[in-house]
Amino acid sequence: MFDKTKHYEYIMDICVTTLHDVDCDFVGFAFQNQIGPDIKWHVVAGNQNEKYKHITLRYGKGIAGRVISTGSPMTIEDFPHDILGKALEYPIMLAEKLIYAYAVPIHFNGVPKGVFLIGQRVRKGLSEAEKKVVLKQARSIEDTLSV
Amino acid sequence: MKRLPEKKEISNYIIQSSEDEIKRIALELHEGVGQTLYSVFTGIQLLEANMTDHESKRHVHEMNEILEKTIQEIRFLSVELHPPTLSSLGLLPALKSYVNLYKATYGILVEVEQVGQEKPLPERHRIMLFRVCQEALGNIAKYADTHQVEIKVNWEKDTVAIVITDYGIGFDVELNRDKPGLAVMHERMKLIGGNCVITSTLGKGTTIQLNLPLQ
Image 1 (tube, one colour):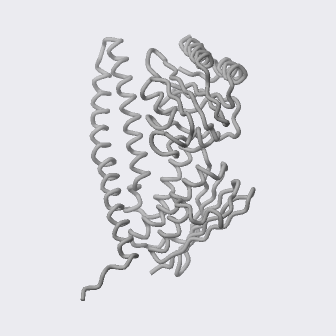
Image 2 (cartoon, rainbow over the protein chains, first blue to last red):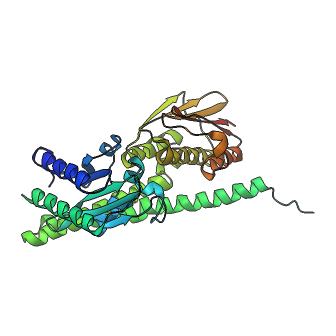
Image 3 (spheres, rainbow over the protein chains, first blue to last red):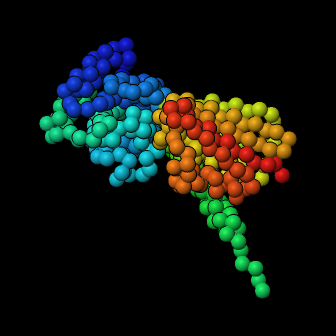
């Protein structure tokens, strides 16, 4: 499980590195709290405000909630166009004014418990190579959490 | 010759029918599906406690966590559709219940203040005021780029006034007057005999004032 005292710095390093290595404006890591079912944004880089601190992810809703409930990566190409449901179901996209996002699940003991999200405020998209970098970083986070 | 219903009466009828249906679905989710799932949840908890095989126990625990999140989401959905407190306890408790969910969903801090004692309102009026506040808060989450909102509910002898102030980027009210998000707030207030005044200053924020005469 995510333990702030043990994992925060390492995951923040990953977020900052990703922000530099991948053409993006925002990187966030959300994970289930140690107690209870709530999922929160615990580590972010490139944020424009502090709203993420108060957001509790809705299971199955928005990009992060859907990635956790399905256990599969998800891309939003041109928010708020061509999305499943309403724009209001995508709080992190609204809070950080993201147009493009790519999110992958973070597994713990084989179960999706969190999400690693990369966002752009100007839509450029991610190349396949950049998506591989994101997946690699997500695996590093999983490895850290399992120790 | 029989009088044909006026446009306002038809609008009222359409809104009332859809509100009745929303309320029915919200109640069914909260009291029906939600309660049934909760019974299953406690049953599985009991099973888990009596299991000895570590792997199976872990598996059942994971399943129950998913169930817990689903129950929570059903409750949230029910509050968004029609807070159970709106019919039983009144406008302010319903507004507060929705605001708590709104804060946790969008990370926007909302302060609700009441001046005076809540007066009994017809359910239709309570629902309309709630919907307009919901629409305003939705617009704020989408466009205002703010982290702070204030809602003041002022109960006077003959009127109730609700003032919603965000401290966001503001917008040109005249240019956006016909946008559905704003038009629907004016229209809903008009249907119950009230009004909606929107003022906004670029860079400073927007104020939405709802006034409703008490019958």
